Length: 247
Image (cartoon, rainbow, N blue to C red):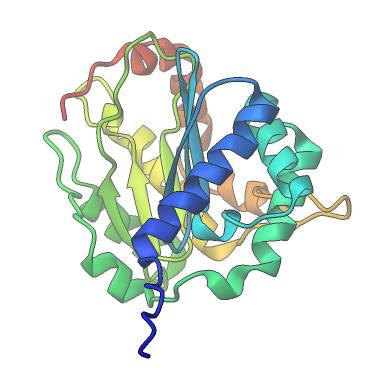
């Protein structure tokens, strides 16, 4: 007699099961509702935010079957930014980097929407001038304004720029594209992010990541308007925090 073979679960169904298991594992440690979105990004392995009582996490699929110590570290890092938990998570990601999809920087940039021209500051021109003046045109990267973040409450901090080593893309906060923000200040922020292309993140003797090593900070002081840009930031940071940026 012919026997009916069991139907293998669909990959998407298995993913949903693993995701729900991960949500339960995190929920017991965070003691709060948790919603997990699983992705296959090549650079950012985890992001999170809290909306009232709910924790929303976006995690690389490598975390689906992570051991208990990593899930606990993830909960500790999400809840209070625990430094030891951050080190454990970095080591876990390093051990599992084989699961990260590999793409060339050029391939990654083709999937992105790059918008370097603002209403008041052209980031492309600023980048090219700085590249020629300070780096002899050797910085092989792209630049764009980042998306306008959703802000419900007044900001307490602002990340004015970022650099992705995987895609080699510099993103500048759109709050800097305002007439009140002087060009030399935007140039300083761009220069700072260009230095991240030269000085890569490394681990210190304590095992923690060092984003701004001493040689990075020394090089940054060579910027022609370094002191003036720092002074402007100290005097006008509140204006940037209160800035309302349209999407």
